[in-house]
Image 1: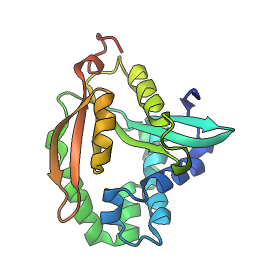
Image 2: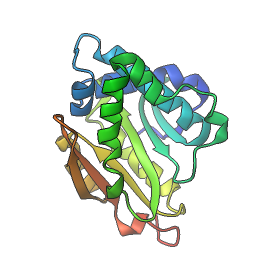
Image 3: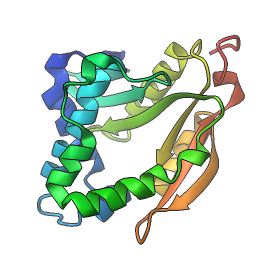
Length: 207
């Protein structure tokens, strides 16, 4: 099994591509970006600013196969984002450019409505866990998730995530996450918020 490594700014184009291809069929992306013919490109444009910010002030782990980046895990730190990312384009701005300000505000409002389902205290947030479709089913996602949880075991707060794809829930449950609650995103999919098990929630516990 390949060993994860830390991403670098040079990986950004590949990070965008893997996310775009991995999330093209995701229920959240289908709801926000309904045009299937342009969804992969739109995903890359929307998610690119987030990935840039995580490279600047978060944690991004990747797996490569034959020198090709094929999987990634991007974590948002519990602390305030690094000021070094303040000059970067914003995900909200990119979304507004893609779908218009009103639709972007609606989408982001629904997503923000799940804030009360975050753990207390909140820890690192797994925003993206993506595997290139050609490499799915080989355990790469699990490798990245275990690697990240072990590396973050001494961080304060409970690691958590949200998924709009119900097929992901058993996978995360096998890795110690439980569903803390869910919200319907307007007329779109059900978003499930999941918290890591207690053994991952404290720096004094074994990772």
